[in-house]
View 1 (cartoon, rainbow, N blue to C red):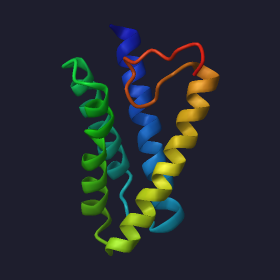
View 2: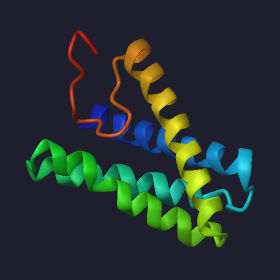
View 3: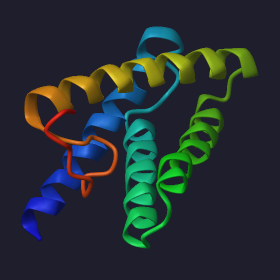
Length: 119
């Protein structure tokens, strides 16, 4: 149980860091707790959907609208600024995920997913 909680907290921090950097490079409009709340919401929701044994596509798709909506609400900016921030955040997240996956064999969105040896 403890390794899962550590993985969950690590996933939350990595996801939050992506949101923080996306905002930092473009808008600088978020309070420090905003990315933490978004990261926690996205990762925990993904973990809950996974624990419910939902289909793979639903596990992957479900967290996106939550992260997008929370970012939009917290930015309090234009639609185009939000979109650019979200796209940058996604690019940063993919980079973090690729590094975490290859170096640490860690799935940074859904900690319960085990990475295959080819990942």
